[in-house]
Image (cartoon, rainbow, N blue to C red; front, side, top):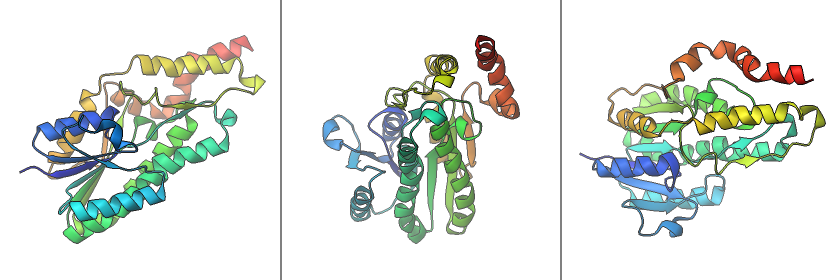
Length: 267
């Protein structure tokens, strides 16, 4: 029997691929988008309006879900975006907005739907985090920080929700081919001391994007979690995850050997 699954950010990227996959498997899928009218008639699943950074939008969305959905089995928190740039050069307001969406937006949507799960005494919450929520390479400090925050929040929340038979998981992909990098907000460099460093670190980041894997493994991982009787909390995904996690304590040394060494020579 199919489950009712709600996926935020389902008009592109992981969200769209996942929504189509789950719909094809017989589940009832409800996706969200900030502009659902743009996709009217294009998808085989429902698409509700939701801007996770807007409190009124979340309230209106929750009211609609409560009225139209009799039982909600799974929430997949997928909506978000990425801020890139040197930390000191990135205006705090840009960093704050990153958290308003990736962290606070995710938390607000989760909290808005928790009463449904608690009333049912069942449910599942799967949040798309990132492998960078476990490590901290350069050039994306606010994005990485938002993912670290997500990891910490849901690590705690899973214990509190266990009494209601609500399962909590996070999925931590490496770089995958999605529209994340195309929709990224980039801060422009302005501090001269970083002029030698900036192109090196930008090239390092771009190399990761260019060599990204196809997103199939992420979709399969989330699908398996939905089917699992006892889903794992932490789920790194990607060919390099094992090595990355093994070497995470040496992350600075790894980057030092590939980028910092050249920068120091230039200086």
